[in-house]
Length: 125
Image (tube, rainbow, N blue to C red; front, top):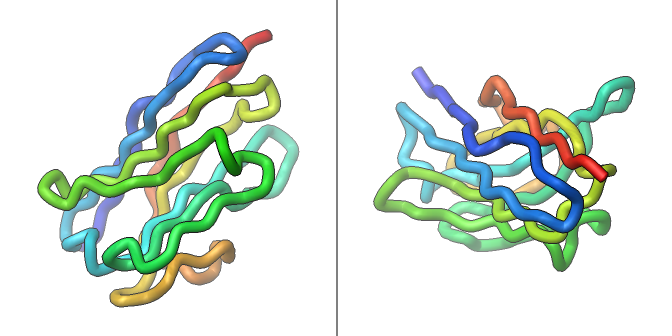
């Protein structure tokens, strides 16, 4: 049974930083692509960042490029999303998603079979 659990969300002022964590059980994360998606109220889920297995590829959406960083800590079986220079429009529920073994990262939700429950990020002006 694969389970992904996100943490690290919260309330922060614009310009501030947060670090989200995605801890997985039932999988050795280094063998799998992991992505972060987000969903704001009334909007569709959108891609934020992805890392391929063994960091084979890293990609970001245009809206977060240069501000967010996705990384792994294989010893902790954890993937992080460091979010800097946060903007009000970054407010959303952030989801961690795990894809198929030995795959590159993808921007498409359909490529990921396991999802966490989400963590709320709220950026105030």
